[in-house]
Length: 620
Image 1 (spheres, rainbow, N blue to C red):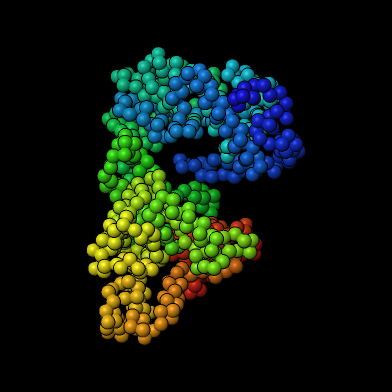
Image 2 (image 1 turned 60 degrees about the horizontal axis):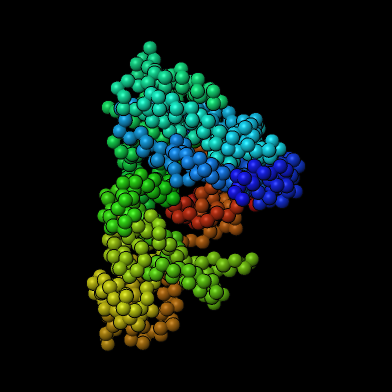
């Protein structure tokens, strides 16, 4: 039985619980026994265009239940679309396979593009509308008791809460009523219509834009107002147009739909590209960058401030640009055709080299085979007790690998880096890594990058490139071969043998370092190999990042002009800042330990370790 038919045949709380995969007693307690104040936590976040957005985050158990309901409602929607043979290409928000890109594509190359926003989209969909839709819609037609239970799961304070997993699905189902009305209107007047959540877009190539949808203001011909028929249909569907967010865009100026330029092809704004490129350049030269972010000042007023950026944030920006550009390469990529990287993708690849390898906070292992990672992880985990440098075991018996195994197969980053699996890709990666990292002037090469290959004929091409780059012919009996990086610097600093390290050929007279007295003689037996290797291990340990010197989180305190700022840090990870007047109470909630953050480490390690800043420990 399909999920839709199961819902239609349900008539009690017990049957709803069975469909949602939970116990009836648990569902009853969550809906009727648990205090309303404990079901949601509300907070506000700044909107990009100004103002505040209220988020109501459900409790963990309620969120799981809402996620299950969302999945089942989405399955019902798909079943209805297939059964009714509907085209269903109007709504692009909160839909699998849809995005701002698919929404913008429908409006490329149009003479006029008209944008409209709905006021309080989720807030106008109240409990009664959700329940009434599930009862009266001919495709659902649920039992009133079942519709009531589902509405109780979905709604909070008589509305769909922003923060609930099922609010997007229900808003699309109820918003489909509006879509049907507007599609019919646009078919009559020659327009294309799409909706992305509360953002409505109309476009046409007609010389005169249809007055039923929009009319120019008598006071200013470039200010456009919603047409009477559009206002009527929106109101009929239970929504309201936001009068401050309507705009007409002409073909002789920039046209944007859901933040993307659509004049000729779907693209990001040129200013955004240039800004991201400047951030990347700054990162490569200094190891850090900043970006503008809207924040509340000490008086509660929104302002644009320059804040330090993270590698993950910049990765997201570059990935977004690449996702837009990738739309025009999909046909070639789907056929397996080799597509040369564009100049923008080359910048993205350089960034990936920096983030994933050059500034890695842990040793990184790249395996030749696609499934090698699986075998290596299980091997390290099973031998963790014998090799503490490879993995650690905590008091609860959980194992944490000391190295990172880089996963590249089937990913967009693997495509950009040219890593798909096999010796041929690693052969190309070696000189690429050497060339790219040589261009970085920022601090880096904190950890080794290890290529793990099978010692068979398939690795011949890798050994040949090693010989070409290092002028050293591998014997294939070496435990490892150093190709490029910091090992040579460590050998000079700690009087290690470059011959033993694979940095130069061995001769009867020993390595060159022995001749100039920068080697203790491991190559000719003057120093035993065990002692040499222990000194090498000690040198590698010393070159690692500083261990977090506190037992928990701390506050880095700055005072200026009667104000005090407390910057919460834990495990070299910046968590947040609180401002207050000097002498006033300013308490931050304690945070759980966070993962190591390289960007914060670079900024904080020197002042904290040298004790040049005021620090207070935080009691958990």
